[in-house]
Image 1 (spheres, one colour):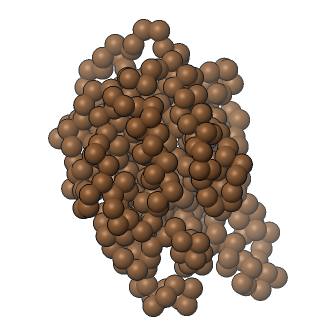
Image 2: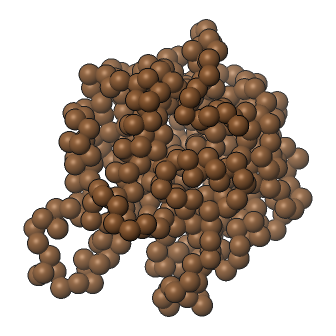
Image 3: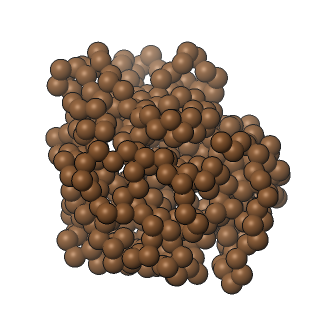
Length: 403
């Protein structure tokens, strides 16, 4: 297996493209463990990070649930909560990784933080406590922007900083925002963060209540994207960071473009005509300067729900008839909500670096182009899609590393 920290010689950048944005460093905290290496190892072995959690309270039937959660691993430095410590760990790892691969910060480094609910555990504890005992310092640490400002101070970054939220499409929304900053010269580099540690019983139960999450069944039995018998998704948590640059030192891959649309149809369901979803994919190709025939794979949202899987499969068949396949790593990572698209993008980077797509095994009849298990990658670009609850459609086009 190729050493993922030491890129080999890169092929020349294709002519006639819009300016790519390079992914030059990654950091990750997931159910696999603290560090991107644990994700690479999980992909290599094809093992799921989803485990049976016990000792949960009455919010979950039987007090247990199948979910991929981030374990505290003691008092790691970086902040007062799991959320803050995981965020800052991923950021530090991504910056260190980028530097090892030859990146040096440009004059303006910005930060985009993709998130949905924020630090749910800290705020839950605050509202359950006697708030008169909370100091001003503790209260400030609970603000969503405080962890980012402290992280920027640590790395001496002074560019623009903001949070974006688009439900499960938040990671792709952050990626598209970062590219717009680099394309327009607002920044030379962007640190993209995507953090979601909301796998707590209160949230898991509500996803179960609306019929999309499966808590009582192991991952490969419950979540079968694009296969018969899938019942929905299993829960997950992740904090992922990526260094994005207008230069391509040691790049893992190049983001060529992307797009977002809104169904504006239902709070929980996908518009049945798929007009806005299809427009999202076609605009992503257009902004990337890419023809659909150049796309080899769809790294799909693929949560294992009937609506999402059917819609994305239809998009694959309609727009990408020449693509080699479709896959979703939800059964491996769990559904990491606001961090899902960025965490799942790691599967595309893994495929570029190692030559193998880390798809979960097929366990039931499914789409004829479903990638099953760790499979040799065919050349070509990948589209990473994410579909957020409430009609948030997103897609980005990613090319293999360029010179």
